[in-house]
Image (cartoon, rainbow, N blue to C red; front, side, top):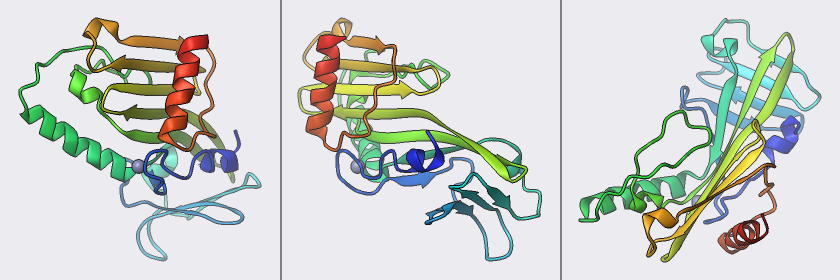
Length: 214
Ligand SMILES: [Zn+2]
């Protein structure tokens, strides 16, 4: 995927239809702008601070000062901040309730450690993807890294983690009423393209079909 396709891979949250926001964890003050001719990142005031410009024609420009951020690939997330915040609140509330903690393995893609989590923590709404970009000598390289979509209704959850690097999609699904042993984890040996999915219904439908036919 080229830069334009990656930037446009998804613009709106599947669940609440709000615009997804760019975010760089190590530089929360970085601002992002998509123009007609390219993608810009900037922090600080007009003349100082980080400033990078990635042209859709393949060109790369930055300002002269040698900021550390220029020396390694930039991992950029694009996600729905509202759904993520709401999930954090719901999880905080549910951790106060007397639900038994059941530990299971999850989050197997794109995360280095196995986190202990509870069935309750499967109640997540997340719509996000991550890409990587690095400029060097007036050129740049860009790659899609992964996409995470997490959804639950009252009865069940569907999580998908797609790694565009290893070329796999992992679907995790279960009903909240069923046993922890009945969690279905399906690994698909081709990254599933969810970019045309625009609603929770479509997402659940797509997951159901993948589970049936894979
Ligand atoms: Zn949202």
